[in-house]
Image 1 (tube, helix red, strand yellow):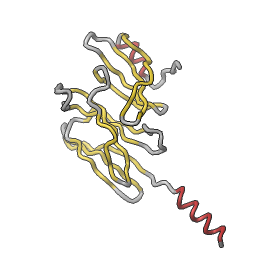
Image 2 (cartoon, rainbow, N blue to C red; image 1 turned 90 degrees about the vertical axis):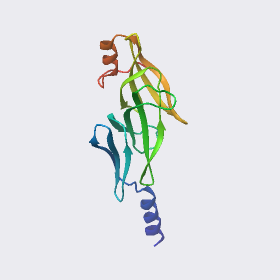
Image 3 (tube, rainbow, N blue to C red; image 1 turned 120 degrees about the horizontal axis):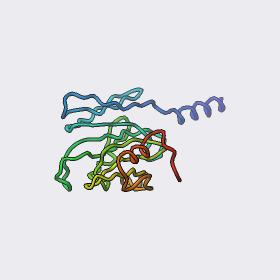
Image 4 (cartoon, rainbow, N blue to C red; image 1 turned 135 degrees about the vertical axis):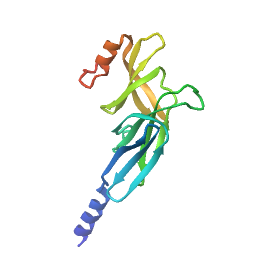
Length: 167
């Protein structure tokens, strides 16, 4: 009897609820980030254009976060620009982990790969950088540059999912 109870408790402790983030677009300036789990559905209103989104375990805790690109101004940057926001599942509800105003350069594109957020950024002089970011205690920090001060074609090559990282 004790063995059955111990196995039951162990199975209950390791049960991980399935989850999936999606984005539902209502109009060019209204979307909803949707989190569906085995038992709940939650929606987070995004009242800004969403230009891209993806999923990944940003903070390395074993659960998937949503990485969402929105176009808007911020309190600290009044220019309409691409921003990067990260959301997590907190007990079946969508919670913001980080709502970045800037990452350094002008954010052009992003993707998630191998536990890192990769960004393609430009400068005002039409040069590009590909930057690898990792989660720090509060927000994304730069891990390294995969390309810096290069023309667009070189940056796109470094940003490509088929690019071989050079550690």
